Length: 109
Length: 116
Image (cartoon, rainbow over all chains, first blue to last red; front, side, top):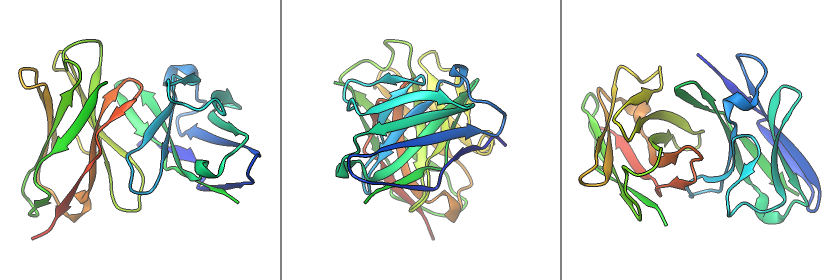
């Protein structure tokens, strides 16, 4: 069973920068896993932020960016805003299968 | 603007089959190279991908659910559907439909409770 691992929780100060990571139990994450990132706030459906490692949707704020970092997929938030407090999920493709990470609870404090 | 909307019973008895439909509006389900996915989320827990169907009808399923899942598409109604058999309380969750790749479009989600 493939497992995708994220930090359970992170805390960042307003205006700061934070990087969330997404690791695969199968080894290094590459662009071939087409990493996606999502933001979910309580009571809402997930909102897509990043697809195929670093591509932004039209609605994705500029302060969000995706990359590969040290064998993991990464989501960096620069100039964090209070409204960025949320759960963040990554997703990786394994051929015909899709696996979500367990999520990172981001606290802005 | 593509919109997705889940529908179906909110309560299912244990051992029965959960059936949900996702209606796509704002575009044809047959146009473009898209997969149409089902995802679920138990209360207070993370997202779990259930499976997806391509416009051609080909499917991929989560290996852990594969024996119980069937996803189908009805292009005439611009809908795709999920059937999950032999449900237990562990299948209680909010069920979402979404468009893949990119997962840029999601339904609002529908809560399905498995209880007698």
